Image (cartoon, rainbow, N blue to C red; front, top):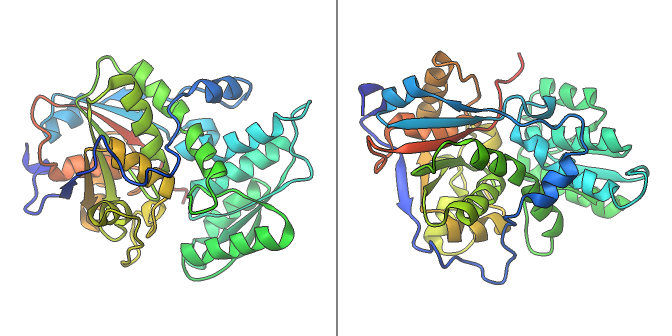
Length: 353
């Protein structure tokens, strides 16, 4: 690879010893059939296929044969793959009555980013109330974006985990519907459906790519997107491609859980990859990725920032969260050679000023 993609310290990688067998056999696995999602989203006027963009110049810089980037920066006007998650679940709930409506329901969630926007947008479309809990560290500009979508914003705690606890308590105390994109013991149906919504992205990518890739790069926070896409890719493409899951080294929840052979909560400083800065994995996502992923990779803050800067130079504006998978490739992934055909996800557009 070129000097741009080879740094002295390469991203840390751990081969998945549970590939094909998996962990947590008593937990549900991510769904892999996009047909129900496609049928429901076909009725949504804002739904449109996002582009799969070839990146030959960037592929040359990174020393691979082909690079295809699924660009989610325009998804449903929200600028993120997350638009497919919570909004899909609310649409599914609303479709159970005729005409479709969620009036009288209140959905509540914690968010550090685009999950909250998806929930707010879905609630607004179907007449529901949205209450989003934010940690104190989340910028007020993001809180204002949520308010502009019609959501009520509540500040609670110094960390995402604290805001999640507050959202769960509010749901219990008020009879509201908790709509989290993570899962845990006793809470599986709605996060499973959130992940199901992401299958729209996976199905589009499969239809768009000209040839089966050799490698798929999937960034992860709690792991929902990565697990959903990995499940569909395995259904369509079998044991190829190699699926690599990328996390911040400040929040290695999935890689540490795979190493331990059980779900673990990790610790670390705040990451510039804020949407991926999740210290506890979704258990459903962990169950799926332990079966489907070939390796887990962590990248540093410097690698993430350098990757985003190079992506911007090549016309792929994003954030450290949205470009983490590509940043790992740019930093120099072991085992991704000159003949590789890589599929990567640009999972969100650049942040607003």
